[in-house]
Amino acid sequence: MSTAEHSHHVRLVYQPALPLSNGKLFMWLFLSTEIMFFAALIGAYIVIRFGAPTWPTPHDVHLVEVIGFFNTLVLVLSSVTIVYCLEAAKSNKTGVAKAFMGATLLLGSIFLGIKVYEYSSKFSHGIYPKPQHSRIYEKADLYYASAVRARLQEISGALTVKPVWTNEDAQALAALDAKSELTDEETTQRKDLRTKKDTAITEEEQKQLAFVKELELKTNTTDLVAINALAMEIAPLASAMSVGEHGAAHHEGLNDQMPWLRLPIMIPGGNMWASSYFLLTGFHAVHVLVGLIFFAIMLSWNLNAASAGAIENIGLYWHFVDLVWIFLFPLLYLF
Amino acid sequence: MSANDPSHAGHGHEGTHTHSHTGQYFAVFVALCVLSAMSFLTYTDFWRQRFPVEAGRTFMMAVSCTKAMLVILFFMHVKQEANWKYVLTIPPAIMAVFLMLALVPDIGLRGRKYSPERKARMAEPAATETADATHHAEPASGQPTPAAH
Image (cartoon, rainbow over all chains, first blue to last red; front, top):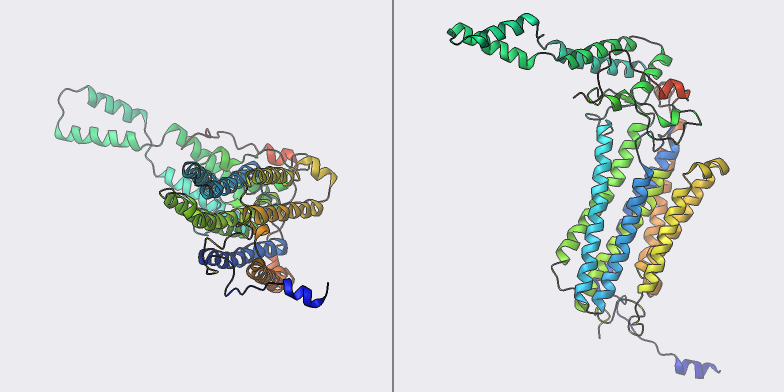
């Protein structure tokens, strides 16, 4: 074929802009910024994690891999339902499109619900991103022993100030209750005795007090090995278990057996882990929440071919949210 | 017709390509589930006992990248889009890599610059205890019941 013949068949078409709608262009530009945002966060996590002197294993910080895996499936399934919603809308099957949109909303809500459960599990173990609430200590050193002692003294102090309900008190109250008529002084005395009975230290609390006093003795040491053993007794680390025990189920410590203790816990690298975990999953959860708000709004629309562009745009956003989780799941739960 | 007209824009093949992608989406979904299960399996004792940790992590990242590509290509329809996709995705991808690399000297290698005082207070990996010492950490006598409070 000659050059002249070839050029005769080439039909150049001038396009004044990118061949996509304004809405879709905006969404892709927005996603471009989001790629950088999450890449910076995930990149920072990777750099921090592998540059750290030590890092807790998922079991050390009470992460359950199966829950993360289930959430991955939930989010992947929601990605499928939103593309089915788009297909249905393009075919003007508004009812089917709404059903798929509703399913996406439901699945996203399940994801968030599970995330809330996971967060509450961390909080109940004293793992917070903020120092005011966090009970994490990096090392089983003298500072840790001092913090444990301070907490034990706080508990024992609150129990010690409670009045003791004696047999004499019980007899006096019984005698006053038996009387048909009481003087003003006796009425006041009976009221005081009843208040004392209600606020008196219980048998259970006396056992707690004795236990706390006994445990406090273990903190009066400068032996780092003994302090480490105490830390393991309070909250055992899965990573500190012998090889045969590793990967076993959750190991219960004193904090688990007696949640009222709320003693400081020792997790090497735990503070940086908590900051990274809550930052990454928190920003991701905010994105999920925003997506759910848009889905809820769009459920009130007539989801036909005319609204396919909008569905495609929110779908792109939702797939991006899914993409982020695809990387977060192995990095946070499996590494 | 304007290039910004939504009815004209959209997918690169939309005009001539009207058949449903339902089967394809389902196939991608199944592939994503299988890949997720594969990355999860690397955490089992079976995998641990046979492969080094680095191999498992590399495998998990490879699986994640494959999953991401499936979502991007099929669910986000990038496979069908015109060449503008490169304009909007490659620059932020390059920026993302540079963002991560920029953190390496100050954050990733921070341990090399620690002073002796800082190292003394640095977290250390927990010493491995025997199963008896940790798992059966019996509390002192007179222990109250766990359900209290």
